[in-house]
Image (cartoon, rainbow, N blue to C red; front, side, top):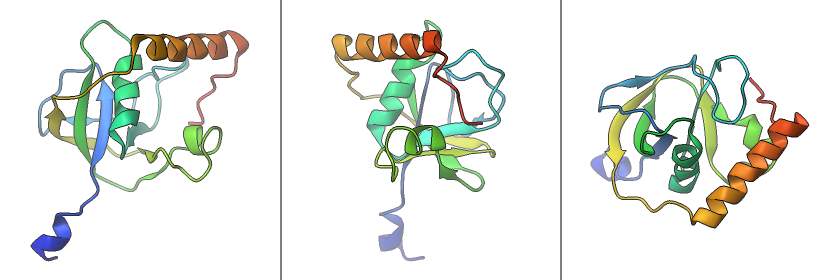
Amino acid sequence: MSSAATMFAQSFFHGTRADLKPGDLIVVGYQSNFTDVKPLSWVYFAATLDAAIWGAELAAGTAPGRIYVVEPTGPIMDDPNVTDKKFPGNPTLSYRSRDPLRVIAEVTQWQGHASEQLQQMKDNIARLKAEGGNNIID
């Protein structure tokens, strides 16, 4: 592959509260930030920074939100939790994999959503939980 072609490689992002370093692996087996069900058998990521910002902001815990540039180590597929339910065609560029994601770097300069917008999203998630409509397609 020529160096010009590699300039246009797709970047992927993962938002979380975990403190990770380049080379670390993000693996399956962790609970979703959106439900209280069993640990997931997929790792989730996106090709848009905005989707990763939501992940970092909505992640459980009190540690600072973090966003990592990640590299899938195996096959990836569209995230059906987003593409089948909310945004057909995957305009959010949301994906998942059963294989680990390798941390390449941390995105240290990012702007979170407005506090009102973040609270509205948290309220929507809480409402879905209360109504039982927050099932994850795992």
